[in-house]
Each structure stands twice: as C-alpha cells, then as structure tokens.
Image (cartoon, rainbow, N blue to C red; front, side, top):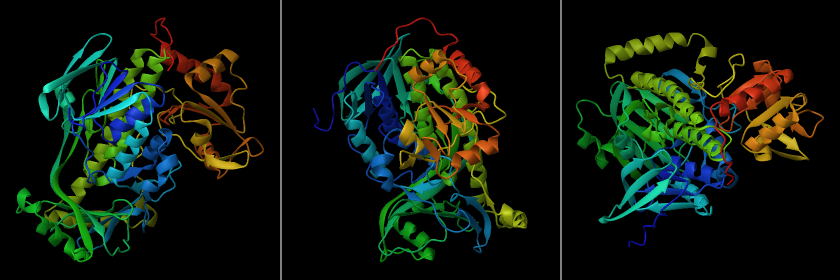
Length: 534
C-alpha cells in the first residue's frame, strides 16, 4: 500500500469527508469531546498553495473553542488601514464606499484577518493527530453511501488504485468535500443559484520589497478592469482581476497576463515572487437541504459565495460548530435527534443573507458598461454626503427559522459577545476561563439565584457554565464589553449557545423559564435511552 495512504478503521463514531479547514475543524471539535472520527481525503498530501485568505472574528472564536488560537494566533494578520480597512474605489481612485472591517468585534478578536491557508491546515491537522480517537486517512475517495436507521456505510476506493476498496460504518457522516461535493451529488441534493457568475483571475504573490497599502482590501470598480487587492496573511498579498468578454479564460490564466495586470500597482518580477495564479468562476449558491438522514453537508458542499466579503470559509466554520454541538448532545443522550433538523434551517437563511450581500457587492464591482458605471458612481457618491454614512458595518445576520432560541426582544439568534475578564489577577478572554459551551452570564446579578437545584444540575450536565460579572466580584469585566452589550440589549442575563448565538436574554427572574424552555426544546420528543458518555 502507498505509504502516504492510511488504512481507515472499519467502524467509527463519525466519518468526515474532506480534510480542508472545515472538515478538520469538525473532527477537532468532535475529537476533543471524546468522539472517534475518521477523516477521509482523496488527495494524498496537503494542497500547498493558498485559497481562502480572509477570516473573521466569529470564525476565530470557533477556532479558539477548538484550541487552535492558544497555539497559533500568530497565523492571522488583523485588518487595518484607512476608512475601515475595506474600500471600494472607482476608475479614478475616488472612494465610493468603505466597510468597517477595523471595528471592535463582539467575538473578542479582530473583525477581519488575513491568513495563509496551507499553514492553517497544517496546524489543524497537527492538532487532530494528537487526539487518540481521530484518524486522518488520505488517498481515499468516497464512491458510495448506504444508510440504515442507525448508521451510514461509506464505501472508499484508493485514489491511486481503484482495485483497493474499504468500507467504514458510522452513526453519522459529515460531507465537507468542497464545492463539487461528490457526496452532495450522491444524495441528490439540489442548490439554489443566485444568478451571479463571473470569471476572475486570482494571483497570490510574496513581496520581495513590501509596500504600505492604504486599506486591507480595496475593490477597484473600474469598468475597464475590475480588480481587488487583498492583504492575504503575514508576508503575502493577493490580486484578483475580472475576465472581460474580450479576453479568453486561457489568456487570462497565463503568467504574463498576471504580471501585466499587476504592473499598474508596481508589482513586477523584480520586486515580487509569484506563488500561484488561477482562474475561478465566482458564484453564489446554497443547497435546499443540509441533511439527508444521517449525512450532513458543511462548508462549500452546502454553500458557495463570491469572495467579495471574505466570508466563504467563515460560513463553513460556522457550519462545523453549529453541527458538532448538536451531534454531541444527541450522542450523550441529552437531546433528541430532532434537534439536528434545525441545523439546516438556521444555517441556510444565515448564509443566504451573507451570499446575497456578497453578490450585491459583486454586481457593483463587476459592472463593465462605462455609462452604467458612471451612474453607479454618481449614486454612491451621493450617499457620501453624510460623513457618518461613509463607513458601513458588515452584515450581521441572525439565525434562520425554525431555530433553537427563545423570544427575547429580538436579541435571540444574534451573535453574543466575548470580552476580556479578570479572574484571580489573570486577564483572559471569557471562553478561555469558563469554556466555550453553554454560557449563562449575569451582569451584577447571580444567574443561579432563582433557578432550582435540579435545573442547575441539568445545565451542568449539558456542559453549561454560570458566570456572574461584577466590578467587586471574582470575575470582572475588564473593558466594559459586557456592560455595554447588556445595556444595549436591555437585559441583565444572557444564555448563549456553544456556537455563541443567543438562546435567550432577559431579567434575572426569567432564568428558570429560560432553562425550562431550553430543556423542553432539546428533549421534547426524546425517548428514554442510555446516556453515552465520551
């Protein structure tokens, strides 16, 4: 057998198809909870070149929950630059719009960051390899799935030898196998198309002599040649150029074309090393279903978006966290399998809103007609009359419905906050102190004061933690992050889920109802079963 190909176990708790960042993060999150996980990847080695290059604060909080940020925070370069870090300029270089990527982010990390995907994948796989129950099996292609009421039988064929086959049986399978997902095709799941499509040349390079960029990302809305400039991680830069109708995809893909298109920015073979250039078709799509029996879709297998907001990978990591906490509760007997249905309903609408926003920006950038581009510039220029409107916020979608939330004056289903706290003279982000599971947090109140002992015991079994933030207490809100958030939402207590979205928020006397409602939601159709502990 090829030395690069690892033999998969015959049985496991979960098969994850795809060893990209979404698949590896899924395996890492499950493996840290004691799951046996088999990751299968058709390629025998890491893809050595960059693909995704931006990641947001929420995704970094998910990686924090997976343990990665404690060791590898240096992989990420925070957004900086004038007018919020994200700028849209016309052919004359005039600023049309700016998005505030430099804002203070609610997740405790920089709002947007550049990174180098091969380094991230290597770090994730190294962490996965330390977990005794997780195996990464490269060089295997999934060719068939067969489901029963209790399990999925996954048939594998050696990528380099079709005569070598294996089968793996698991209660669950997660397909994080990319935009062309073979698993999605096997399941017959259809996608909804946004109607946006454009070919772009993506050029990654390393500056030999670096220069200061005015923004972290600049979108050049030039009808003669739409382009994007991106800080794509420490020591790396990226350009993207739209294909015009008078240029073939083959011509656009040539090395000399890449250098010619970058030359107006002073990027030449004398001061830069070309790492990769490839033509991609930017699209916006999402699947109608995210679950088929015991098989789930995640990442690009479930959704595809143009990169104008840098949200593709972020959405995939949200999938990983949203799915893994549900699966773990079901496995432990603390939730009925019906909770898994809300994975798709919540995530589909959330990601659809981001895709539609990215497509909207893409249509602005990709305008090739000079007359329509001039009208666009005039309309956007008129919006700049209000200086406060110049820099806008990135989209902040709420979870789709039906969702595992409790009505709470509109804050339910919104992203919660993470700030720095001081405990025993040590300052850390809250998740690093209490863990990234269910969090019941009170500001200047004791969230346990009115809950019953039985409710609190159940919440602890769920993995929940209780925190009281007080200026004179054991846990202190160092920067006032929580005080500001609680004031803004008119509450004193919040109950947040393991994926950091608000289940409920309100007054102290509402805590017993919050816990009762959560328990009922998780176990409404639950039947008696043995609790399985990792």
